[in-house]
Length: 484
Image (cartoon, rainbow, N blue to C red):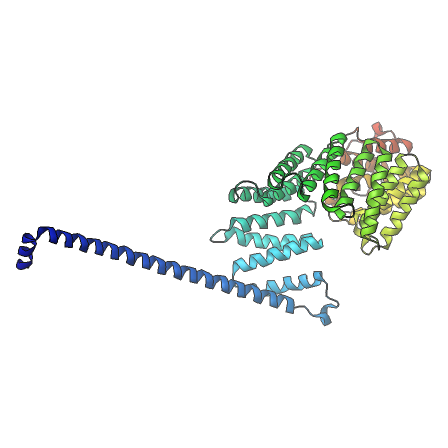
């Protein structure tokens, strides 16, 4: 040690250099070692995550294998998608995946398919289970949670539970705003679905604002020519039509129509839908000639798309009947309505379709205008009974059906015919034997959706008077506020 010290004193510069090099080497080595350790830890973490993902994928594959193998034709008969999904749901309850994330994803898939099959209550049940998993998931997955909330909102919307659906759509929208930067297709979709909820509950201003936001966002994303732009224009037009601003509604429907034809052509389902909406708008304006022309174009497209028949064709025929009746051509109205009813009765499962209700109601209106109150009563009662089975029950249409039955019963000197099954409270006005009370309750319900000056309301009042009933003498009705 002494010699080393004396050497350092005699060779100060060299000793200093060596010392600096030693320290530098030591620090560098430490940094390198720490870096290697960090890389090793990261590699181990990635390997662990990869293994976890692999196990989740295997778990998911195993779950789906069990689901599909649970289907037995000898026990269930011919297997439909609905039956397979029911069997899959039972299997999922008995043997849930090991990973909660896999279970949530599986339930979300099942719920989405249930919604598309029209089994909205089953969709709601499985999606609520998925949501409970997503809300407690660690680490939290905001995108998956937002998607689950959106699907649950859809299942509730189609049950007619619009206010509850809107709360889930709002939560989904908020999460999507937090997790996306700028404009995004999912954001526009959330705005659109939330707007549909507000339109359904009669809040036209809020619906208009949300549809406008969706339209502007889609324009920024896609430019002026895109199928989703056409959809947004159609939605915005519907909000104006429901607010009885028919001039603006017609202009927007025409913009949507021109764009969808440019992008997809005349022979397209979306084109027929916009034509149908435009026709309804023109009929509300009192333009029976223009409405008939648009209905006719929609009918041509739908017949080409569905040569064997379809509920949408019946709806178009019913619309044409209404237009003919508004133009004073009762015979043409009755002929078109007859076509609609014959087609509806031929379609499997049509007894619970709103288009069938529309067909009977249109024929009832034609019979009523022709002076045949007995035939009108029979058709109005059939329309009402169909709408009572629709899930969710279209509240305005059902109220109108109750009113038409009561008025026709009064004109025919008959009692109000009772349906085989009484509706529950959520289905709108109950079926009462009291004609004035039924009419008053129906009018009060309809006024939640339309102004007293609208065409449909003024026509309803005219029919009431034609039956010898003074609208001013109807009993006062206090509607019970609905929770949803």
